[in-house]
Image (cartoon, rainbow, N blue to C red; front, side, top):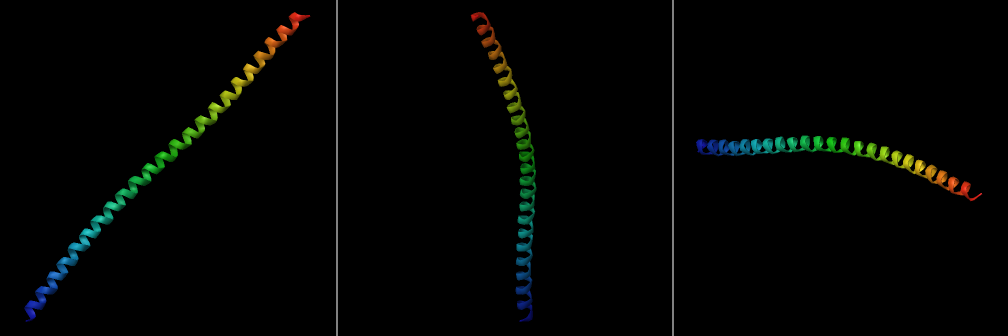
Length: 85
């Protein structure tokens, strides 16, 4: 009778060990996914930062171009007005 109980306990322990190993594997897989997601997040944040910087530069260039165009149009207007006198 003791042998039967002992085998049942060992079998149960074996099941528990298998489940723990499976759980450990799942946790390891989740950790890998977390690491991968964190890396992807970091890369996306860097890319976003670069795009924000590029946008800022393009806005400055656009404003400079507008200013130059406005000055050029004013000069053309002044030349036209000068010719009217």
